[in-house]
Image (tube, rainbow, N blue to C red; front, side, top):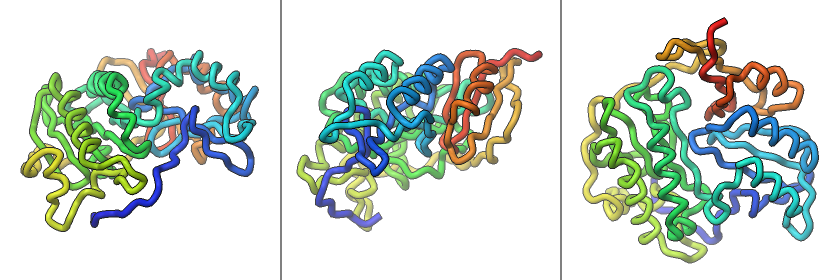
Length: 298
């Protein structure tokens, strides 16, 4: 990608920075790896009924959105913020906009080279612990593919792809590959690349939002983050078929149900029977559908 000149900061919405639309405020709730629970979703639907339009939208980054929220001078009601916080959707208010971590939805449950769920959780903790990361754009995206190839084609800023049960290759921007590191070292390796991006991007309104925007024709912009690019590991040359709908066997003998959500709009009528079936965990996918994992066979 050629260098991009920005003249304004991004306005990607969050709870504390809503987007004001014609039907009211819109807020985005970031889920690490799309993971939540049926209890949290039920609570969020109640919050939407009280403060928004009653529905919950799923996004292509495996996050959630509420819209139609009352606001005054661009600020939502503190009671709404309190309700969202109590439901567990605002664990790090100062860093809410930068908790953008996408993970292979089935990781740790079926297939893949490694379970990258713990890596995502550790990376999130590193991001939230460092005030420097609040300078990242709210569009800055980490993508973790567990080696099955379901997210390998996603545009990203920093990421990784598992190559075996204990190692993954770091990614820098959408086209460049870094070191192969252990899963234990991976969260800090990803955070280090993001820190370097914060350092080189600058702080003005014209600062780049994405790693790819640093790239010149020869890729020298990315080298400032990780040194000369590495060859892509042959084990990353895999892709995954689209996730089938319905019941899928997990590696541990239980099942996960892949449930379509038409237009990514989770209404109370659709959610009620769906959440009744859920065992507890729920995963929002980047395809705007839901996974109900850990189901015991009838």
